[in-house]
Length: 261
Image (cartoon, rainbow, N blue to C red):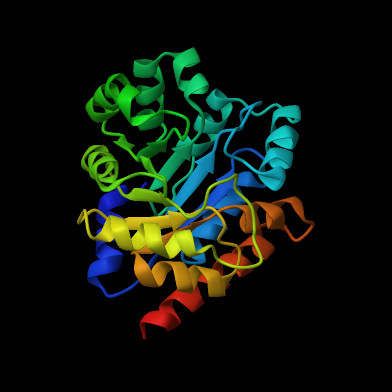
């Protein structure tokens, strides 16, 4: 791991660029580690590692399929973190999973396990702001950034509260619904980015519903960058292997860089 999530994203912004966070499903394939290294080399600023959960309320069909495959292959939080601990990745790693996983392990033990594995941040999408305090306290103590989601339905007071408690970046939810590729970028994606940018100096990244480099450029124009998941996981499920995943990430990187030239 290299530095914190917020440091990496602020550095990209200060250099005049747009950030790219890539989601990959943890332990999906035997070449999982090679995929993570290839994604970093292809230009991701931060890599989000999904820890599979049997009842993922935020995930659409593609990521659900990946979760099921990984779970059938024996993926567990402990073995994913053990595999990450042995990796030398040049960008910060973030874990995305569900509160049940953290609560089952014990919040303090989970936070310490993330830190031991070199994970810089954590996203628990089903944890509401009002119930964040206990997790955030142990995460802060372990040096793990608690990244919160901001929904397009929130009023300015709630978006401000989310921004003030979030660390690393604000994850602006681009549309209501589960993750997945859409044919067009939802108008709510640029709107939530614009609103959050008016309320906080923390990096604002937009995720959910961003499946092409063109959509990434459109969403990033209003914020500081994007999170891309389903399109990448679909490539992980294909026979194209880590280099195929890297080629897709490179397309996103080049499109975002070109938009800032």
